[in-house]
Length: 274
Ligand code: DGL
Image (cartoon, rainbow, N blue to C red):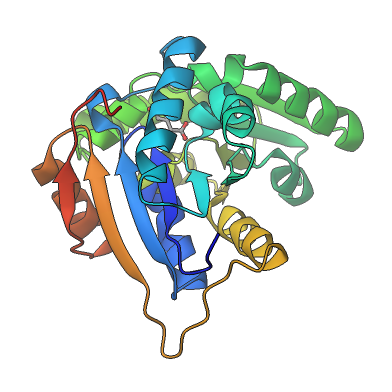
C-alpha cells in the first residue's frame, strides 16, 4: 500500500461534509474521495441489514481507486456496519464515528447530557453499550433523543426553513427542560443546523454546549495513517478532492458550495455499484 493512495470518506449523504472539512484542514496533502449515498438516504430509519449492504458496496466501489483508508463519516453506518467492513476488508484502515458521550460527560456541569442522533444509532448495541459504560464511569445522565426527519431536512438543503426550525425545537426543548446543558450531535448532518439548536437554548434564556466529533475523527485518521507509515507529506501540500453521489450531482455540487465553499468535481454513480 502506497502513502500516495487516496482516502475514501462516506456518509448516507451530505452529513459527512462536517467530518471532511476537518480532514482537509488536518491533512492538506491527502487525495480525498467523498461518497454521498444520497440516493439511499436517510439511513437513520432503515434496517441494519440494508445499511450493511450499502456500506460494503460503497467500500467495494472506493477500493477500485485503491484507497488506503476509509472514514465512515456517519454514526448510523458506523453503528450498523463497521464490524462487517473490518471483517470483509481486514487490510483497509477503517475509521468510524460515534456520538461523543465521553467528551460531553467531561463538559457538563448539570450532569445531564442530551444525545441527538438517528433512531438507528440510538437503538444499536454499540450505542447502548457506550451509554451504559460512560454513564457508569462518570455518573452523568444521558437522555437520548431520536431526531426522525432532521437529516432529511438537511439533505434537502433546508438549513433554516420553518419546518426544520420546528423540528429542532421539538427535539431540543424537552432536553433543555430536563436540565441538559450539553448536547451531543450524534449524527454528522446535525452540525449544519447548529445555529437553530443554539436559538432554541437562547429562546429559553439559556445556553448549551454542543459536542461534534468531526475533529477527533480527523485526528484519529491522522494517528492511524501515521502509525502505518501512510501519511502523505508533500511540500507544498497537494491534496485534492473529488466526489461521487448516488443522488443528484447538482444537489451535491450545491452542498459543497453552500456548506464548505468548495467546488470539487462530482460524478453520479448508479445505485448498484458492483
Ligand atoms: N449522517 C448520518 C449519521 O451520522 C445519518 C443520517 C441519515 O442518513 O439518517 O448518523
